[in-house]
Every structure is written in structure tokens, then in C-alpha cells.
Image 1 (cartoon, each protein chain N blue to C red):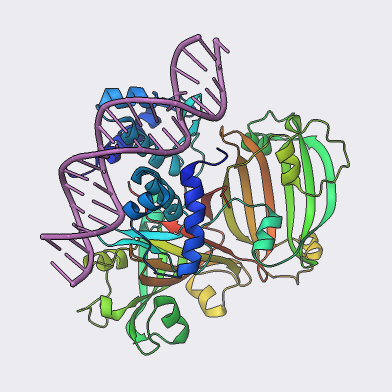
Image 2: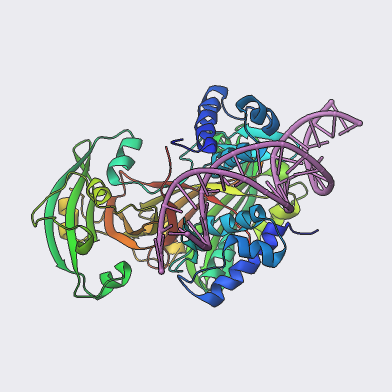
Length: 234
Length: 234
DNA sequence: AAGTGGTCTAGACCACACA
DNA sequence: GTGTGGTCTAGACCACTTG
């Protein structure tokens, strides 16, 4: 069995949600269980996934409803390319630097390395529909990308990492407003004094091992960040 | 029974995580089930909550481990006051405007009202340790805050909303970098040309009804946004 | 009163990590 | 191989919304 049953049902229901439209009432958990030949617990597992993703909401005693889809459902870990495509833009890239350097103290701390350990560095101007969108510097522990020659310029860093078993499942991000320096502004074709969004990101695999750190500077006139936050229990 | 069993176990385990420290191995699900007299399904429910909150991570075949707590676990829906206290700062407030106005077209759309419907408007300079942190404009449908006289300046908008049964459980946020106008900069004691973070937020209750819309302008030199993102399935 | 989602149990088998 | 978490079942009762 390739995918678990609850996962297949989740995708099935995702399609059903699109057809039904916002605030439509979904079939009851018991009916779904019977219709798909599953136990109610499995149905609930699928619905929980949809609820977590913001696709449905549940009201006790009333039923499960399709969430009115406004903006992005929830902030997810994506590569620049995925992000741009989701916004309907064509991603591109101009490599400025591709080399290997010692991590240094600050970076070593974020990547759980020693300061002398080598990291692969990749500096790129990221394009959207051929126009500069952001300036991005990515670092990956060199020990986890064996065989990568200096000067290699992978089409997709995420694809390359994936081939080497580096699978980020989570990332911590810090977002700030900033003014780019003269050099940065020039690379981004920004007028002087225009603001930018700076994003620091450290990505982790399923074992909570750091696999990548990226610092990005986005043009504020072309980019914003959209996400959903939930109320939490103490 | 005030709280469900999985919720009480979750809190119990949260304390255990703090004692054990990062990357410590937690007891197995079966052992927890036996120790607390619960079924394994209930234990898994508690652990799933902790995993979702970023407090633990699970590795199939290996066990469940305490997550290395670095930055904030995940972005949650908080009031300004809660946010500041979480950062170790004392929240304050200076009310600039407290009145009732027609929603207007754009706001009506966000709050699912008609443009002529009245909304309570509250404009405040928000302080942290008595220094300006952000300029915040909040709108709440007046029909859902009956009895609020004009000119009332509630200590906490969230407390007031809570008393009237307005319980936000989710919010959609858009974050941008921006340059404040002259008037805004003056209210925030910012030098001209300094950047700021602008946050648009619409909050919803459990039935996905909009209950509040807020637009905030934060000083970039005193504020950033920290959160965790997860890899998602298609 | 009827029907909904919310919680909980006691089992079973599978997939994976580690020694 | 042994033990872990991952999936799944078939039931039961509770809390809540709605008519």
C-alpha cells in the first residue's frame, strides 16, 4: 500500500471541498466511514489533517464544513521556486557566488557545526518573471553534500539536497524590515531608500538536525508574507 | 472531568520535557499508556499535540524525543499584550481614536459586512516598556459589541471581545516592509526614512466568522517576527 | 429528541531503526 | 531480532447544536 488510507481519503476530500464551495456541509464522519469502508477513527484522521491545513472547520454538534478559502491556508516550508510558482510567477536565478568556506562562529552555531567546518555557499539573485525578486545566500554543511565540486551551480539547491538525503521538514524563520545596502540595492535594481523584507531561515530534517541556513532580502514592493496563525493552549 | 485525559497528559509531558532537556528520549507510548492508565491511542493524541506545537519530534523505530527549543515554537494568535509579555516587555497603550464609523467597502469585505454597517474603531500607539512599539488600528463589527459607548477605551480589546463571546481562534496575516508616513513616524518617534513592518490581520472565530481586523505598523528596529514552518503534502 | 463531532478503549498488524 | 512509532478496526459513551 503506497499511501495510508487516511492520506488517500484526505486527498479525496480535498477535491470534494473544491467542488462543494465555501461553508458547504461535508458528509458526517459516520457516513464517510461507511461510504469508503473505513473506521470512523481513520476518517477522523483524514479530517484532522484537513482541519490542520485550514481546509475545513468542525463544529461540535453541527458538522464539518468547507473553510472559506481566502488567502494561503497556512505557511509552509517551500523553496523559492515553489513559492514563486504558487504566486503565478516564473522563477529564475542568477548565481553570483558558488563556493566552499569555513562556517565561522555564528553560522556554525545555527548549523550545529564547529567554526572551521566547511559549508557550501550559494549566493543568488532570485528572479520572478525575469525581474529581481530577492537576494539569497544559502549555506549547507559541505560534509552532507559529498562530491559537489567547487563552482558547481545546481539548478535547484533543494533538488540537490534531496538527492543527498537532506530532507527539510521544518524551518525556523525570522522576518525583519530592513534597508538594503548600496550593493544589495543595485543587485535588486531597487531605488535607494526603498525598504525590503529580510528573512533568516534555518531548516531541519525529521531528526531535528539543521540542514540549511538561508538569508534572503526581498523587494518589499514585490513580495509579502501571508500565513495563518492559530490560538494555542497554555 | 474538566479537561480531557489527553490534554492533561499533554501538559504533564510538557513539564517532563523541560526537566529532561533537549533531545532526551521520552518513555515509549506503551509505557506512558501503562504508567498513566490510558490507552495507547490517548497517549498518541497527547504526543501529537506536543509534536504539532514543536515540543517533541518522533522517529519511527527509534522513539519520541524532546525538541531542541531554539526560537518560538510556532506562530500563535496572540494579542499585543501577550506578545510583549512573551518577549519580556511591559505592554502599554495610548489611545488616539475610539469611535464608531461605517465599515466602507474594503473593510466590509474583510469582515463580511455591508459597507454601511458600523464598526468600532480603536487607534492606539502601543508601548513596550513605555517606548513606542507600533501603531495599531483595530476594527470590530459594532453589532457584536452591544452596549459599548462611544469614547469607551477598553483596557484590553481582546478581553472586551471575550466578554461578548467573540473568541478568535485563527487569524490570517499579511506582512510587508513599508516606510511610515511623516505622521506615523512622528507618532512612533521614528527617524525619517527608517523602515517598518506592516501587518494586516483578520481574526476568525471557530465558525470562521470574522471578528476583528487590525492593521499594525511596527518599528523595525524593535520588532521582528519569529515562527516555524512545516513541509506540507500536496 | 435526534444527530453531530469529541473522547476513549483494547486490541491488531505493519514499517522502520538499531544492535 | 527486538522494540519503536505508524496505521487501522469496532466498538462505547459524552458534549454539543439544532429542530
